[in-house]
Length: 153
Image (cartoon, rainbow, N blue to C red):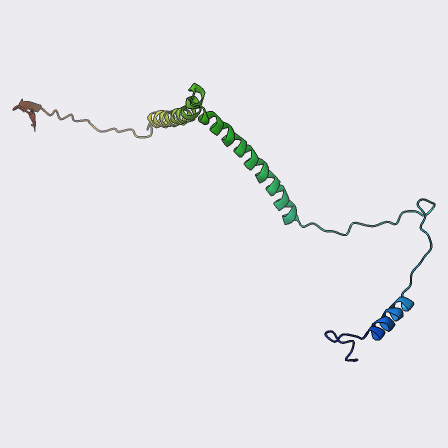
């Protein structure tokens, strides 16, 4: 290897001119003018890129998340614009969602309570004699603070 052409060793001006002349002399260049239009058919350039399914899924999810965030941001902006002006509308914007949540919780609780009452046990049939024991309760209230004593016999 020539020490003068090794990277890090500069060439002299004469050597650089000779090297440039050799590169230009051995390079091929077609100087035929190109046609702007003509009978030459276009060259088929087939698509060779392959997009993996995870990349498509990620792109679609990113678009969906971006659209959702934009919608949520617009909603927050509208609510904050309503809260900025202390009017009946702004007060309603704060209290109506809370009232809706409270009504929803009440409806769910009521539905659960009615569902529990509707359960009946028809499978249990007892065929034994029933004995009833009566208890007598006596209640007395005494004193200024109303102490109550219960006696069961």
